[in-house]
Image (cartoon, rainbow, N blue to C red; front, side, top):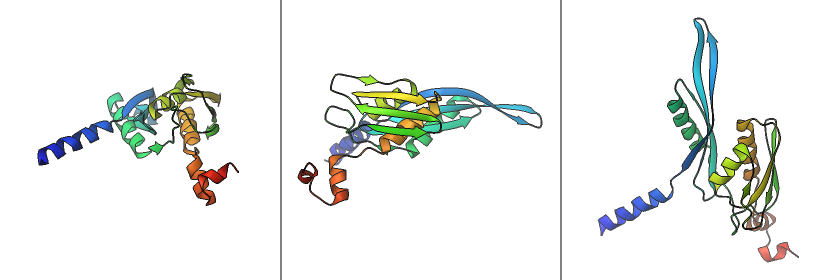
Length: 174
């Protein structure tokens, strides 16, 4: 019996696997006494496609090390997102990250993810299947990803609102 439990625990651990996608790898340099020191910056989005997503940035002297650090940073900054039954968001939201602004609207089932660049990656790894999104302002991938995360953190469900107001969910519509 003990072996069966262990097997069950292993399968649960496998279910919570995170996917990672690299948005951008950039070669950056620092001027030091002996000349220029080159390193790499990787922007990584990590998510489990079930409502958890995070954006991480890693810098290292090689690409693989930068990606590894970016994944570790993304795991530190995971957020939970409430999803509807149609795998959309509960209400329209806006987010800001640096000079980037992101506007998101819920969409009907079958619409798909209509978004561009870094915002699309964040939404897909968060598990959102039907959404309309638009990047406004900057086209910087890091700021757009952070704006998307900022918008998704402000999502609230009906039960959250009812709990904050201290009333039952049925009385929200009255």
